[in-house]
Length: 285
Image (cartoon, rainbow, N blue to C red; front, side, top):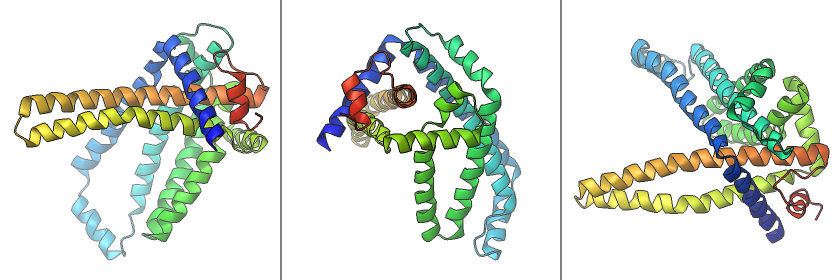
């Protein structure tokens, strides 16, 4: 177990070196986050101003807490839009990472062009993901406790099974069903050990988040002590640092995903990664 964690941390370091060389890759998670805010606002504002939520609550109370059917339609549309945004930007980043692994110097435009070329597959995968998301939400709402547990288990299984779907869509240009099958096959081939690299990366990012949490706590403490200006400054700094942390974490996870896919699919160590760490992540060391 310690060796696996060590390999995961080594993979995180390799992903960081790739990102450090191509800092412009941070553009993709930043754009994804901004577009997510825009999509959320485009749904939240009409729902807040048009829908009579007191009437919705009364309807739910009369139907034993059952959510009105139209809400599932809204959730489905929201999922499609957000998934399209996220998958498109991730596909662009994966494309750039794979180009870097082949010794090229990718630009942001290269990534977006590659993602645009796969747009039909991206939309199809967004539809599948949105459908699964709505089904899991319905299961969760079916029973307050048991439904939540079942939805959590099924959601985790779906996330694992579809681990490699985005790079498969980018490279192999297949439909969503074949992409899921291919992703599951790659995981079976490696016995799921590719997930170790992501765990190692998440552990490193958690450690890096600790100073941000401390900064946030210091800001709250100063505000509570009546020192408004320094407290507000620390809170703003903590928020900015947190957003930067999210962007870096998302970029690193996608770079690592692209590297793991290339090794799993082609048995070739990506440029910037160590063979020993890659083999360890796949249980070959």
